[in-house]
Image (cartoon, rainbow, N blue to C red):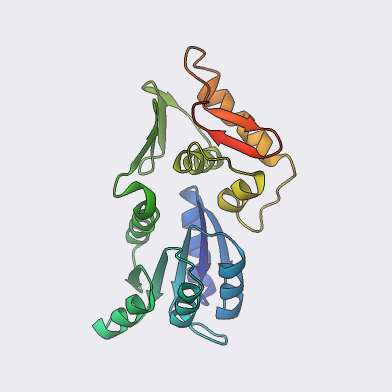
Length: 226
């Protein structure tokens, strides 16, 4: 899953980025409102973490209002040093989905991130499953037929995105835009390579079970039964 952080305090932005990347998310960062808005409107993010007070032609609430007017319903978590009820209400009324006051504990931030990412498609369950594959987003475990499968952080992120979009044809560009961040050094065959890694762990060790990772020539990939 791909997250955008818009935060002008570099220390906070970089610390949050590092922490989220350790949780297997792809993360981009903007340090002012104009760059943040440009990235938010041009890239397909799964979540935006947005500081309320930002340098630039608008502020965090202005970015929220612009995105919502454009019918962009990406989940937005506002960060702010203001903790008054009216300040919180202003952010939520503008269209933000959640609000976190600085200073905050990272464990609370990640809990809110997970809740927002689950909300649209997976209700409040931390476990994603398809057939006999079960992925737990809390403890980063994956099993098939009850057997534990060891994945790298990138493989886990790729599998999570595929399960969340099971039985849909996903192009390489779509997969890259949600699983790798903007600055990643991605080669043309990067997605093919990682799909090969997943096949070697999800499909090949289970020859008596149907393969779940399929290539659609000229279109992309599908996770699910044929």
